Image 1: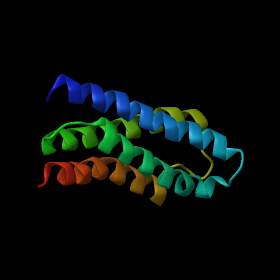
Image 2: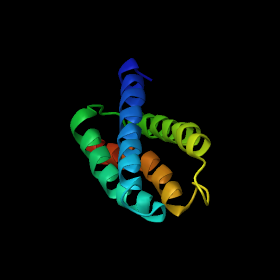
Image 3: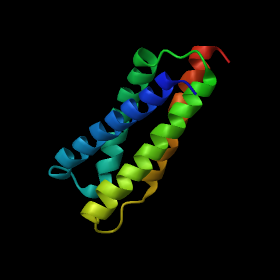
Image 4: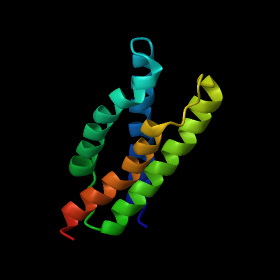
Length: 119
């Protein structure tokens, strides 16, 4: 694994998570918590795809797999410590939208990697 992919994994992974976190805090005041994740997800997908297509320059499918792995680990850990433990959401945090978010966080880099590498 190259240092570039590690830096992009950690840097973009944290930044993408932070964007969703900030959107969640803002939207929490406006919309019911039950639909919060469903509103943030399309925005997150668009931003993630933009990062993958415009900012990630790797030609290796392995690098995209590594990005997906790092981004997913970041999302799971930061969600747990800065959402679940800190805010203790009523009714719990882990629902279908959160699991879909984790799956997409892992798979989007791989799908984009397949497209960009031509495999």
